[in-house]
Length: 54
Image 1 (cartoon, helix red, strand yellow):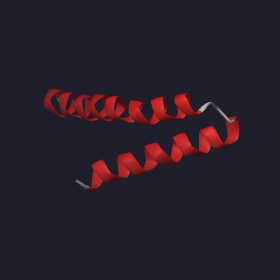
Image 2 (cartoon, helix red, strand yellow):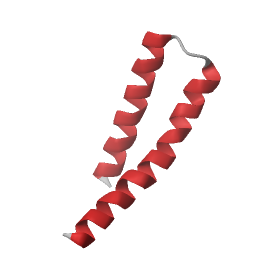
Image 3 (cartoon, one colour):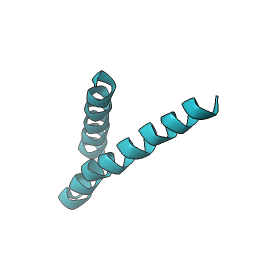
């Protein structure tokens, strides 16, 4: 549960800093934040596969 929370915090922080620096459009910012959901499931699914194969 802590790893889930930390992933979310880091994802939002990185996207926020990136869009503060680049001054990207709002729709791309929201799309990047929503992309964190896909990234979350992909990252933790790959961790599970790695645990099973080792």
